[in-house]
Length: 525
Image (cartoon, rainbow, N blue to C red; front, side):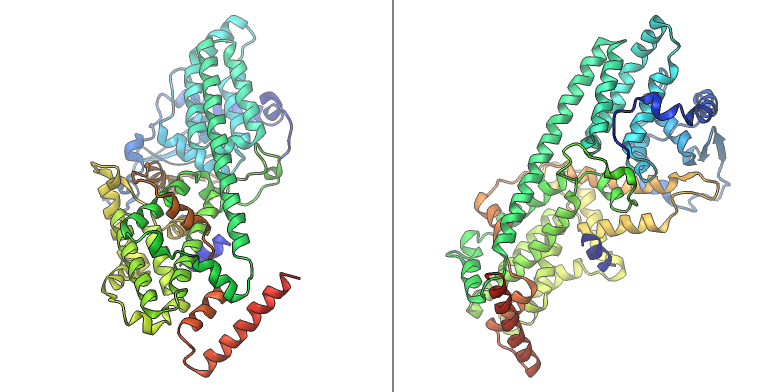
């Protein structure tokens, strides 16, 4: 599984109304929180502006010798005017806009991202809608209409941020039903807000349709690749993989090839939802079994992206092992070293690492006669840049440089930052595992979630960049669908290219030939 690979690197359904969900056990709780939190809102410290919230210096320790100022407001705990913890109810309340209050964007993003560790997005949606509208009904139509008219623009704004940043949440049919219910409720007091909600839903549906089409294309590509990669007699597969044109006949310009890799990387990054990072580590709840919107297509683009890394690594190894002549293998090796260098220059660290991984596989690294014909100085420098020692210090330094270049970029090409993705997942995983979600007093550890949101928000800034390079359709098609060898097939192809050097390798080649031919026969019975 993708999680194993990363570690190697280191409800009920139905149309419940808002009232039904909360009147049973929430009335007593809410009376306390509403009394305390609403009264203190004008006094409590506000979370800092979005642009500065995720500044790493915010989380550095020992930056001052003075004693930090600790404050508590209605279930929320602040340190030096920064929210560090709170009860779930108080944090939900802080998300809810009022006539004279709207939460800042950093808090909205952080809480929507991390609250799913404690409750389902539908449960949060229901609570927010209830607190925004139903809780404040007084029974007088004119008074209720006036209040809805006053609060409606802020409700629309909050739901706009939710649907645009976390559209996957609305694949749940209950979430869509809640959106439509809210549209009807806002129509009671404000026609403009009703229209705004309708436009919001239309944009959301277009985005979900696009996401669904993308995932269908991924499924089709995966099915095609699986069919191409089924067990074959080795010579038959060699002919299939070699084709009439090798990779150098298809594209002999390393920069153009690196550009096409960047196209694929950036497209796949753009469809990864921020919530996928959190959901990957969250424990499954019974309510998660509920039939969801577009239920046949779960949001698993994070896993698909890790699979793309693995495919690219095996594709590189396959292309190097396939040529019969040593000089042809050397040319392919040199070409991919140049492609890796161009990926580094672009800021495409994920493709760079996939290429290095493919070239360091045993079937490739053992081709000593081939490597002896190649100047490896450039390759050695690239390997050093991605060296895992000291927690990938060299890579992290290069990544910071690329990020700085992106922040001051004058061209779209300079804005490109594609991180080594498996390491990013590992970092988030250990951040999640290394800090508790709840403190001893029962409060949610929001200091941890600020840091988690900082990392994910940085990923979002990289994800939104549009790839500026021209597309080469033949090269893109090759990268996505060209057949690749399995691990055993690669090893055998390597032995066919440069023969075994000792009795153990001869025995291994003999065993591989037998196993692959047997697998071919079993799959063709």
